Image (cartoon, rainbow, N blue to C red; front, side):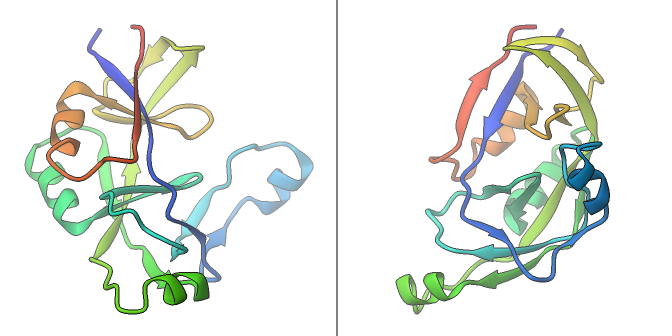
Length: 159
C-alpha cells in the first residue's frame, strides 16, 4: 500500500451565510455526523497564508495550488466553487489585505482508519475519512508542499 498522510489544515474562517447544508435533519437526529454542503461560503476571520484551508467538513485551496494539483494528474479530486467573504474581525485586523482566488477542493477517495492505521483505502490520491478528514498520497503531498502549508499538521499513517 502507498504512503498516506492525514492532514489538519489551517482553519482561517467558518461557514458564511451563503453556505447550504443539505442534511440538517439527519444531523439534528444524529443519523449523520458530517454535514453535507451543497454550496460553500468561506468567511475569513484571519489568515496565516496557507494555501490549503479547512472549515469542517470543507477544504479550499488557492487557484495556484488547484492548478498545480490538476497539472499533476492526481486521481480522486475535483474542484468546485466557493464564495469567499471577510468577517468584520478580518476587516479590522487586515484592513488592506487582499485574498487570492480560492476553489473548493472535493476529494473523491475514501479511507477507513482504525486509530492511525489504514484499514481500507480506495486508491485515490485525495481521500476523506468517515469523519471527513483529509488523507493524501505521497504524490499529492509533494505537490502540496510546493505551496505554503506552514500551519498544516501532517501525520503519516500506518498502512
